[in-house]
Amino acid sequence: MTRPWSRRAVLCSAGTGIVLLSGCTSFESEQSTNSTTTPVSATEIASLECPPSDDDDEIVCSQTVEAGAASVYLLPTPTVGDTPDSLELTLTNASRTDRTFNPYSWSMWRKSASGWSEIEQRSSGSGKLTVTAGDSETWTVDTVIGYINESATLNSGAYAAAINVPNPDGDDWITCLAVFGLR
Image 1 (cartoon, helix red, strand yellow):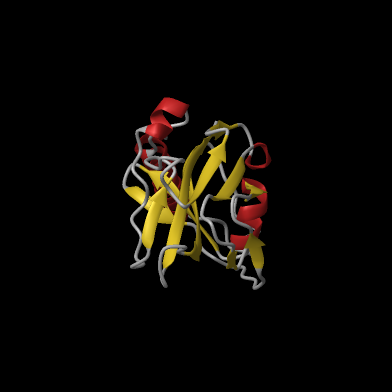
Image 2 (cartoon, one colour; image 1 turned 30 degrees about the vertical axis):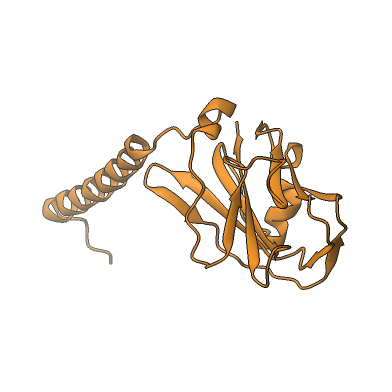
């Protein structure tokens, strides 16, 4: 025979349920109030600085590059798009020598109110691609994020993508960065 619930047990269970639900409710409201809008206009994207790099490589950023002066650079087209497959990243080799590098060795960052955070790399590949002198190579942002992390979702906000290529003016490497946004 089952014992009927006592008034104390009912009140205790109800109190526990209310406490648990109120904790979840406050957690959700804290998350929604802490979210900030991320820049998604071309003007806002142009005002951002490139993410800091841990490498000792020279950095060429789309925000500050002068296309006629840089030997190798990466530019987004357009600067802001609606979806990752609507944006292209074009690496231009304006040097006088061919550049051979691994076309799967991308990095990507997401901009938030607290700064840049790198998107976790879960995929990697090796290969060789040669971009001849005076030529360029183009990838969609959708393709690039697939090289990094196939399960990553890019939402509205500001992002930066980077690839390393040999420096035509020395024995080191150049990190080419492109800053772009998604609406």
